[in-house]
Image (cartoon, rainbow, N blue to C red; front, side, top):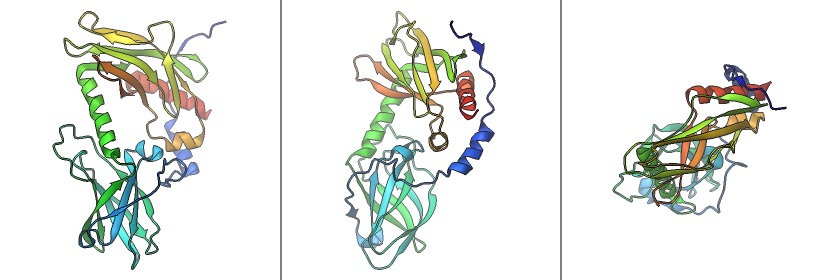
Length: 293
């Protein structure tokens, strides 16, 4: 017997989730969730870097918070305390310094902290190296950063700018009608609308995230295409709360963001974010409430 459809009820999970944050801990430990490569560092001139060197790496955990894994070490002498940390790169808008007051031991053992990055600057005209801007003993110092592997900032920048270009040509969004069709499962739509004449674009698939799985319902097209002939298209989408453990619910910071692969013309497909807003967000919040039941 098919499951009866019912309108999604209002969400009330936020207070309960706050309790889980306290219980679960969270924190900034980059351990098991980080994709660590072997560490190699390049030391900037001593008079500029105060004997410090730094390495940037990608971290699955930190990137959900728009941050990279920063490792800082000293070349010996005394322990050093770095105060606020800030990324300086022509590829990204600056963000406010983040206070850390982290001790960098004289033993040479690195200290690891998240280093936030801002919005990609898509018209960046320079390839200046990335630097850590911090302070030691009240004095600002700049440490040139080694990227491991090389080019991670450029890769992040290019991916974000490619997604921005897609959204200049088409609007891709989650629909406004959502219904519960199974336990911890809702069904709605994904919609694609041409924004500029002459543009042909295809949305090839939709994916979920750590918390939610997502996919088309199967009773519509697997791929959506818009052009001057068909300027808008939509298909059914099923979203399910696939992971409800407290660790995932408290640590993951992109809970209400699904993803899709979109292709404009003959270009390579680009991953774009689909941020759940309005009715779509309320539907996903309700699924999280069911996770906590």
